[in-house]
Length: 177
View (cartoon, rainbow, N blue to C red):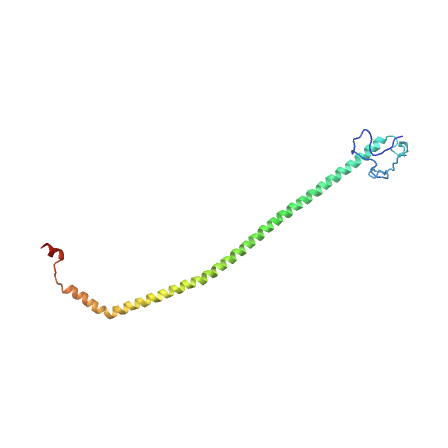
């Protein structure tokens, strides 16, 4: 009498479990079969002639389903990883754009502050320049006024000095003689 109990002597441990459930049902098989310790091989329907083939077919189906499940899980994981990469790339692009925008705003703010500062302080320079120009004009006017008052006397003195020549000997000549 042969009974399926999850492991056969020719299979390594953990390779295939025919009755992993406590009630002994082969739930993964194409036709669920109840197997109990008292079930005889001869009483199994349609597989009674080769119980090892039943076990092999059931293990093969279970392994196929397991492999397919693993492949599906791997594809799903790849999709999730790809979505995460795309999301990360998008976030990096968005962060760069936002940082560039903030930099431009900060630059514009600092340029406005500089222009305001320059306008406030350059007006002091303009005022100093205007004061210097007024002072120069006052001095120039004083010179013009002095020239017009004493100009004729200065011209007369210059002409008189040129016309009335008084020849005098140089001190060097007088000392040698």
